Image (cartoon, rainbow over all chains, first blue to last red; front, side):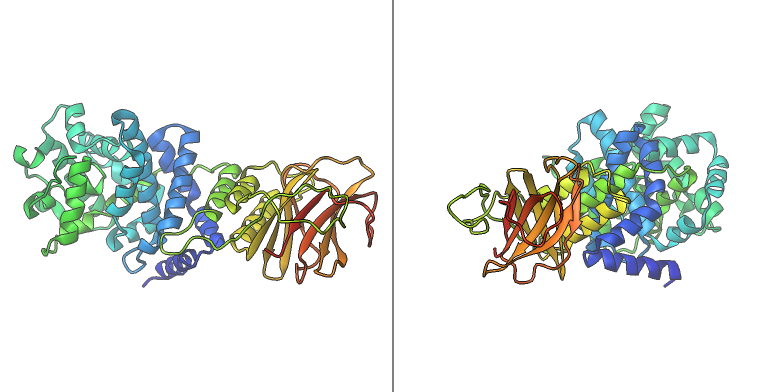
Amino acid sequence: MSDDRQADARLAERIRSGDTTALGELYDRHSAAALATALRVVGDREEAEDVVHDAFVAVWRKIDRFDADRGSLRPWLMTVVRNRAIDRVRARRFNVDVDDADERSLLRTGPNPTWDDAVRRASAREVRAALAQLPDEQRRAIELAYFEGYTYREVADLTGVPAGTANGRLRLALAKLREALIGTTAAPLSFADRSLSEEAHR
Amino acid sequence: MNEQRTLDCSTADELAAAYAFGALDSDDDRAMSAHLATCDQPHAEAREMIGAAAVLPAMLEPVAPSAALRDRLMATVAATPQEHRPAATTTLVRQPVPVAEPQRAWWQFGPLPAALTAVGLVAAVGFGAWGASANNQVAERDAALRAIASADSIHAASGAVGSGWVIESGDVAMFMATDLADLPDDQLYEFWLIDADGNAVAAGILTDPTGVALVTLERGLGDAVMFAVTVETERVEQSVNDPVMVAALDA
């Protein structure tokens, strides 16, 4: 286990033990990045701070679900922040039950060792450069999906392409980001140019 | 509610990138989570994608939150139980008592006081306007919240000048109040701890009661059964004044 991950494990253990100062340390380390993410999604400072507040409270409440062997705290925290922000945006559009959606979003993903390293290492410049290398339609698909909270079917409608194409753009974009930030194309191109059957999207 | 959608392995693999970017609708999202949780196939490629989107926030310039957000968060956390741990063991409180009982010694009051809960206390600390006398308000507030979170006991105090709490954490005791009445410049609040034999010892003073007042008492609660506040013109070692606030400590 890397030093960073060991430090995360210790911090998580302190939070797990009920140490509120440990959560304060987590907040001091990551709140600015968390607020940037929330603000990018919801577009309103006050609401973004509410998102960050709720996300850290969720981490506090659900810290027992965190497994340091599977990843580090920051990616998990950022996923919680983003998902809660998106839940709010979706709730505005579709009248979704935010609490229910948040519960699912917390349960949905865990940390991932492959991407944790990239998350830890990659600078803002590197990530921007990796995104800049994507074709416009792939970058737009990521923007709409990740930062604006649209499903891939909605992305398809917004961009005037079939659902399978929108999904394929996300797959291709992800593979290229992986290549740029992790340095291998070993994983997922096998599906990238496959057009999905409409049955899969129904 | 619709019957839950299920996915076969091929579709799960096809939707993995959308899942990674959080771009599935609720039904597909549930189905994908369920499939990955139960399928005996490795789905290594799909699982590897899941963390990919977490790299995207790194492209954004950090935005410093307001100082108030940290205070609000710590206040909420102090009052929020964790899923894996039982609810906070903070205990409180009795029934309120009118301060003036002229036929009895001033510490000989009946059951105390109005149930002000630890959650209410946390909220008061987190959201209250702190006194201008606090040199480091954030640090003091955090200290107060830590004291509340780790409190062995919290006792509500009430009286003619407002309400407050006596917080015991290990050997340390604190008094906190959010709405104490202002005093003329030549007066101050003095705190007292009274044991079962009626012996009162001075435990500190408060000269500026504006906003959230927080005072670490000069001694732990020890054997004290009563906490009291009097108004004095200067610090004294024995008071002849009636209390303006009391709390029972033997709950």
